[in-house]
Figure: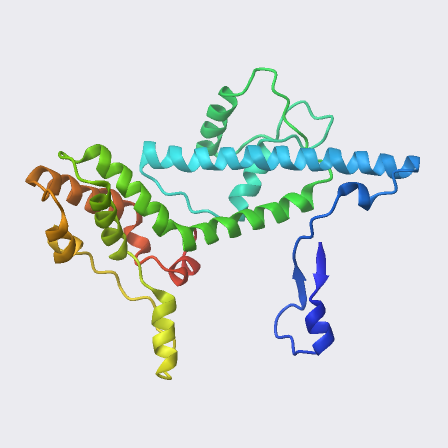
Length: 276
């Protein structure tokens, strides 16, 4: 639903951006239609059917693109640059163009077609794919919203999820038992070396009347002690043995830096400069 900001309309504040602000209002669908008439009931049924198809298509597209990213990463060590176009392609290949079409739109992307075949193999043989007739504009907006959600998720939640992932990996891989508190201390310190606190840096610069800083070049720690810092190293009980130190260093240098090293340091500005 698209509505103008009523506060701005009342106060007459100058508008420097698009004055139309889009937001969602939760309403009962029955309140949108006059179901006492035959036309109103038919229109409601048509809308419900379109909503069901829209949800079905975007659900399958989300499954497909997630599986595709994971497959390329695990099988080919390849990162897939993401945009709304990739999601819209997924919407097309998991749906039929029109209701009378016997099958979905052909997938012309070879690697994506391989992933699509893998997804289709997990579905029942008689699984009926939905059609997207009348939903072109809605799916275009769905694709834009999807990439926006991905970027927000990466910008604001990647560091927390990376911490949890590190804790789980260390609990499974270390050659000794480390208390959970110690694992979280290691993970927190590792992630801290990957993140640039952009908001804090902007705040300091503005308080001094300086221009907004740009993300610094990332410099990787040279040793494990540099990575963890003296406080973490000396607080661990029991201390890390040599095998655990080697496992920890390999996890950081090979898996973490090998996967996201080109995007470091992690900060919102960095993700605006590059694709998700």
